[in-house]
Each structure stands twice: as structure tokens, then as C-alpha cells.
Length: 233
Image (cartoon, rainbow, N blue to C red; front, side, top):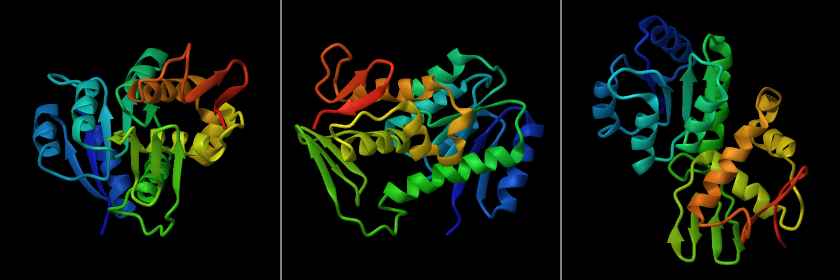
């Protein structure tokens, strides 16, 4: 079954261009120029990934991202016409997994889509063919790799694919400091060079918020200033 991609962009030329390139890769595409129409579809349709423009009339991309994250964990890529760090950080904080700045190369966007879907399928039981049945645990935290479940004190944590990947890497390397660069390489593979350190910082902050962890007295994710992050062994 083909992966189903949502595109929301009020600039028809851009939305149409993305649609052509994704369909050429055999993706199923649902495209909307209106955020209100897209929202209706989001509430009734299961997607594998969403591409959202930030600067939308009526309902902006940030709000759409928030509404998706209420019920869904599939990857979200934000499109922004501004090369501004605040837009990127805001999108990541609200649950987006990646961002790309306009103008962009269509093939680069396709590569980002494929990268996000690989990670999503790897850990999502509805898609995954991975037979791995390991469980990672730490101080009330339980991560079930084969079912993409994460529990904290027996209560479920709703993590995005990127958040799940970061937490998994830290748990698999308990006691060892993992640098931001190493996290980039493990998560985004050959894409790590074009990211900024703020990307990992924001995802770590989001994880801490969901886990009720603190920067000053962390129970789980500890920041080693100037070096990276770790979970104590």
C-alpha cells in the first residue's frame, strides 16, 4: 500500500510541484490550498506524513500541527518562506519533525519525506515489519521497540518519531554522553550536516516537558554543557 501524504499550501504552484514529485515516487497525495478544508480531512483520514506551510490564511501551519499532534504521531514537515530560527524552533516545539525553507529543491524535500517515513515505519507497529522485541527501561520509563510504545510510570507518552528516536538512542547508550552531532547522524543520516544545533535542543526540551523532567534537576535526560546529552546508567 502506498504511503499517504498530506500537502497544505495556499501557494498553488508550490503545492502542485510537490504533488508531482511525490506522485512520481508512487506516493498517494492529498493536496489542499485551504487550511480549513485540510483540517476537515485531517480529522477523518489516516496519513503517513504531512507537509504544512507555516504562512497559511485562516488557520496557520502551527495550529494545524498542534491539532494533528492531539491524536497522531506521524511525521510533520513544516515549510517556511522565512529563513528565521524562531519559525523553525516554534514548529519543532509544537511537534513538527523537520522543516525546509522556501525556495527549496523538490528532490531535497522528497529525500526528507523518505527519511521521515523510514523512521516512522521502523517504530510504528501499523507499518513496521521489524521483528525486534526488545524493551528498554530506566527509572519508571519503559520503551517497547516492537510496538512503538513508551510508558512513564505506567502512563503512555505520546512521542513523535523524532522524539522516540532521540530517547531510544539515549537509552541504548545509558551512561555515555551523546553529542548533538552524533544524534544528527544517527537520526537523519546524511542530512545531519544541514541542520542546526537548535533542532536537537528543541526536541530534547519537548521530551523533557512530556516527561515532566527539568533542566536544573534532571531525572532522565542530563545536559553535559558543551558536550551533549546522556541518561545516567
